[in-house]
Structures are given as structure tokens and as C-alpha cells.
Image (cartoon, rainbow, N blue to C red; front, side, top):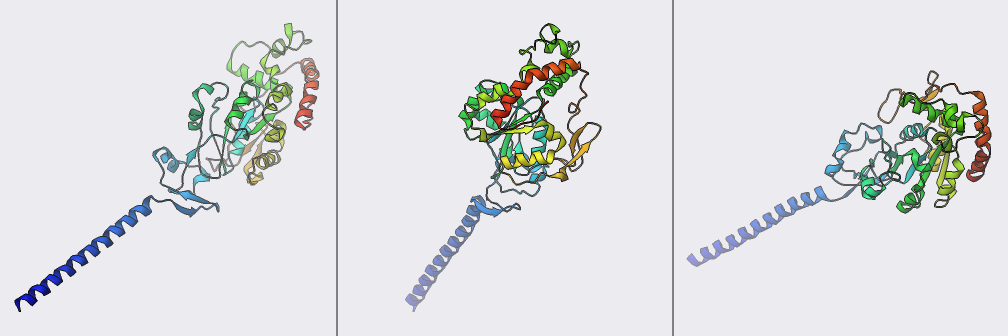
Length: 338
């Protein structure tokens, strides 16, 4: 009788031990599964209809949560943000409307741009591509990274350096009547310095209005064909888009349609984004990337040009005519400059 009780007790102990082990296994499995699911990559659908990998943001991405940009207003934690090298560059031309182009293209939800001119390929190339990448904005999968530095177009070593980074880079250059561009360039210089010589004295050797001083920067930059020739050594023409600075002012919607097509983007930027400011003589934004209210570009845009002697303007137009024709032939676009 005593033996049977002990045997029963032994069996009950074994059952209890097995039951405890089973419970421990269940607890371990449950907690482990929760832990794995919290760190594993899942697939979530964004409001834009794309499927993207969802991962916890790292420390570098923390500032994304504070981004007031409308293009991020629906994003949540779980999306992976990266800083990537640009796949498109606004390479120039100075005083032709590059800032306007940058501000306009930033309205697109699939474009992210650096805010300032980085000058990597002309001034900071020795810092390396890793440094350059760190200057880029955070993007999610499917967004284009862009940068604008107008001096890239005229700097000799830039084309080969961009090609080494990525031979498939798309290049955008804003161009305008080179005479108007030279006067605008001069106007900017006058606004920054005192006692600048008159335009006519600087544009011509000895101020005679006969021989154009081709070494003077504002004049030299307008010989677009000279610089385009360098770029075409490394990039096919199909990878360059020439944006009309005049049309960017008179018809920004049409010109931005060309830009969006070139970048392979859906045409999102349309007439709803613009209004014409008659005081500045320039199109302004009804809403921007960061503001829902109307705003114009900075006060330095749309400056009033100083009076330039009409004979000096005519002489400069004669000087640029053959170079303009060559540029039209090389680019395949007749911009109709006088």
C-alpha cells in the first residue's frame, strides 16, 4: 500500500515537471516571437501606393520626425531613410534662374534637394564622395536626390568628376540671353561692392565699346557652347536638359513639365502652385515645400538692372550671335535670343 502511494506520487511529480517545462517553453516562445517581430523587417504600404521596407530609424534619421515638409506628413516611424549621392544635378548657369528651378522642383513629393550650394565638384572634391553624400538630404526609396551649384557648368574639371561618380547622372542647366545674364551678373556684383566701375568700362577693353573683354567673368560665362563642349565629352546630349530662363519666368508650368518629364517624374507641379508677382516681375509660389502660404524668392531675385548704354548692348549682341548659333546647333534648341 505504501509502495503504491509512493509510485503515484512519483508519477504526479513527473507530470508536474513536464507541465512546468511545457509552460516555460510556451513563455520563452511567446517572448522570443515578440522580440523577433519587433526587430524584423516588415513590409508596409505607404499612402503613395508604394511598398517599402520598414525598419526602425537610426540616430541619424531622428530629425526626420521633426520635418514639417508636406512630402513627409504622412510618413511614420518604420520607414528607412538614407542619404544618397545625387542622381541629378543643376549644374548652372549662374544668374539664369537656377534658384528658381531649385525651388520649383522641390515642390515635387518625389524630389529632395540640398538647400545650399555644396560646391563639391569644384571646391571640395578632395573631401571625397563619402563627405559629399553626408551633405545630401534624407530620402526614402523612390525619391530623387538633387543638388545645385551653378559654377559646375563652367569649371573645367567638373564633367569628368561627375562622370566618375555616376555616368548616368542627369544634368540640368538653366540658360538665358547671355547679354541679359551678363548685366544681371554685374548687378549682383554692384549690390555687394561699392565703387564698381560702370558696366561699359568692364565689358570692353579700354571701355571703347569696340573690343569685347572676353576675360571678364560676366561676359565669358555667356559663351555657353565653349562649356557645353566639355560636358559632351563625358555625357550624351540626352542626359542634359537645357531649361529656358526666360520661359521659367513667363511660363513656369510648361517649363517645369519638361523638367518633370526629363527626371521621369509624374507631372505634379502645375498652375496651382504659381502666381505672377507684378511688382517683382517674377512668378511666385502659392505654396511651397515647407509653407502652405504664398511666398516669393529672396529679395535678391528680380533686382532692377542699372541703365546700360544701348550701343554697348548692341555690340554685345553682335559678339554673342555666332556663339549662340553654335550653342543652338549643339543643344538642338533655338532659344531665339536677340
